[in-house]
Amino acid sequence: MEDNDVAILAGSASAQLGTAVCKLLDLSPVACDARRFPDGELQVELAHSVRGDDLFLIQATSPPVDQHLIELLMP
Image (cartoon, rainbow, N blue to C red; front, side):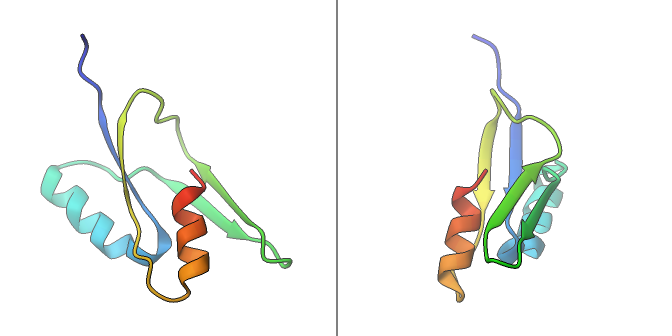
């Protein structure tokens, strides 16, 4: 069995926490672009594939809860 890489993805509500965790683990966070359209729809694009990686999502669910939760579930 081969070792999987570890990837950290921090949402917009926890960008500073994600950066701090990555610094402690000597990792680079997964770059992503989260765009909200005028009609309220959200699009999240990752800069590179995380297929096969152990992915850890860091995202607070503080207000506005609905927006932060949807952003957490999109990747």
